[in-house]
Image 1: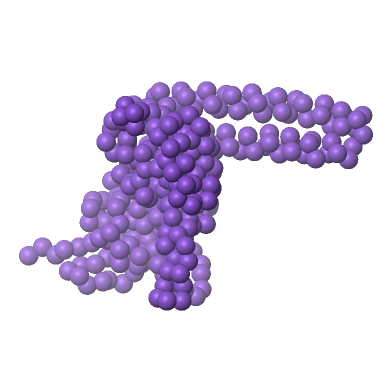
Image 2: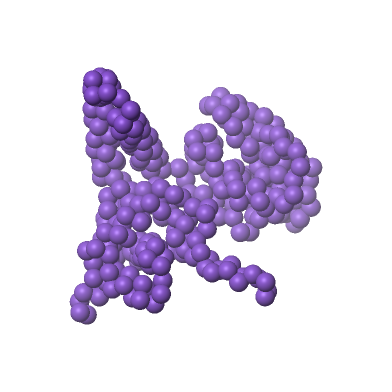
Amino acid sequence: MKKEVRFYLGMDVSKLWVDITLMCVADHKKQPKVAERFDNDAAGLKALHKWLKKHQVSFDENSLLVIENTGVYHRLVWEYCSTHGLPLYIGNATHIKYSFGIARGKNDKIDSERLCSYACKNAEELKATPVLNPVFLRLKDMMTARSRLLAQKNNIKVYLGEMKWSNSKETQLLLEQAHEAALEGLKQSIKIVEDRIKQIIEQDEAIKKNYALLLSVPGIGHLTAVYIICCTNNFICKITGKQLASYAGVAPFGNTSGTSIKGRDKVHKMANKDLKKLLHMGAVSAITHYPEFRDYYERKVKEGKHKLSAINAVRSKIALRAVAVINNQTPYVDNYTKMA
């Protein structure tokens, strides 16, 4: 009778190297863990491949590698797993950290061992991260570049505006002339990046289709649609509307316990503030231009809701509609206006 063998791997990824821990489970019996360190580059991953082959790790559904999302440092590992078919789960660092409970001591090797144990314990619930899409990564990098350039431009404008109150007209003019070239250069760079974003969307049919579907939702414009696609990995994991609303910090949660705690429902501070800001501007626009959302907002206010709470309800509605059009793969239909 053939043994049932599973391999659970945890990897702590840093800029220069990766620490990996492997645990083999044969017939539900855990074997001793083995750990190793490799450079986080092409040569290091080549050595990692040989090490995995040496320990007879199977590159199929019987294996699972868990890493934390590090932004850019884990991309080579993601590409390696996508190329060789090794199931990979890229988890939220905060969620994984809290799952360890009260943990003392920390270094790269210990972190990899904890991730290995996390993979073994939660293997049934963890869904492998989809394979790396180079086009999607380029889109995400362009959006990040745009945000950085826009922040630099705004910082200069804020600085010049603040100095205006304390400088003489002559000094202020010198400062504005000194920053004029920089501001113009930043404007041109932002325009180049925005043009590249549009080109990238046209290159990938899946991204292009979801982008068009999102634009059909009231309150969602070009930037909001692209940002949602970047945050959700182009909806490849089939998230729910409540999950997107929770991620954006617009889904209210209860706050009660027994008879002593009777708090009101409120949104959580742990959220993607940039997405929340975009949804807020979209909600204001939807309330202004679409009767359905305007009537919904006014009804909430009449019920006694604070105006900001009513706007948040509209933000949540937009997030729910965004996921609905993607999951159904059909554009948004304004039945409210048709009925009217």
